[in-house]
Length: 235
Image (tube, rainbow, N blue to C red; front, side, top):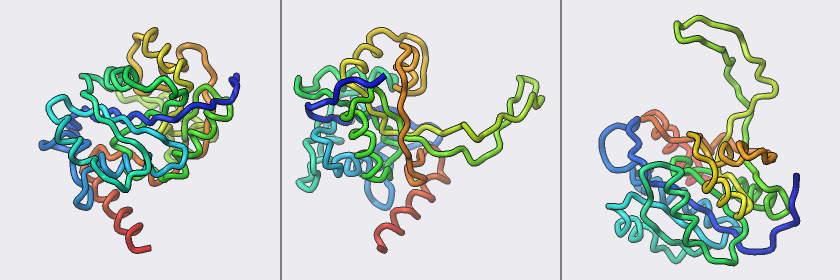
């Protein structure tokens, strides 16, 4: 169900306190470099580049808050950028970023720092859909692989038709009050904020995502991301 259109400001939250073990040893995942620039900086630039985003709040590793602030001092950002200390989990980091938002923010986007190459138009599409009255919005892309259901013993139980399946991306957009309610009321383990909101019985609206908004979680993803960056720079 839609709500009245939003008229306040838009804030984008970036939970970036995770270690990123699958990328191997080293700095926290969000601070790993892609083409010479921390992954987090790429993500913040994409968010701040949207004409609808007024504020970006990064929830950084507690021990790296000042370091992250130094990365994000950039007059070219199109939005205000703030940094807070994140928590031990993704949801805790989002909750901490939510706490300090100005009162005039009524649309909140939540974006994975590990999706550094999200096109600006996807960010704008999500924010716009929330402003138009949708309570919760997610970008999605078609599932291209054949999906099998498998039991604990490795037996194939069946093939799941993929025509109606979509893979979820970020940023995910929400009415601020709804997102705050979800973080206050939902205790179950979920992998994203849309899952928290969905558990409240709220309808989720989908917009088109983008193939370049993939998640950088493995070493091979770094190679792919740097290839995309090189392609963009050559245009």
